[in-house]
Image 1 (tube, helix red, strand yellow):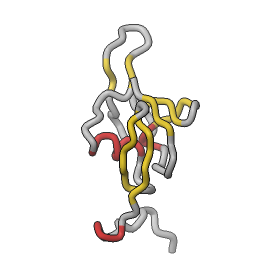
Image 2 (spheres, helix red, strand yellow; image 1 turned 60 degrees about the vertical axis):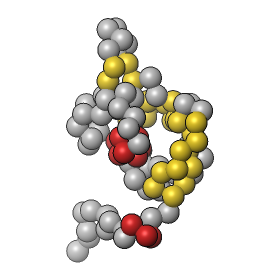
Image 3 (cartoon, helix red, strand yellow; image 1 turned 135 degrees about the horizontal axis):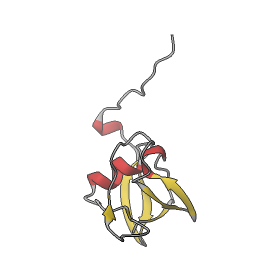
Image 4 (spheres, one colour; image 1 turned 90 degrees about the horizontal axis):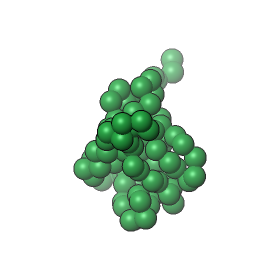
Length: 93
């Protein structure tokens, strides 16, 4: 039988990697979703609405709503569907 969810590692076993968020280095847990890592660090606004310029934050956290759309290494990606890896260059709103 295949497991549907990843095992959560013990806190001491979590590998930390460095990513750049708006040019500033941040240490985050490798393999977690980018949305979870940014929310944990207090980054609530990931983009602005293209018409109203209202600030937008992650909403569904499962890839349906696109509210967490941001730029990763020059490409538009949903933060909730993107796993953190070392050296990422992330740009929020």
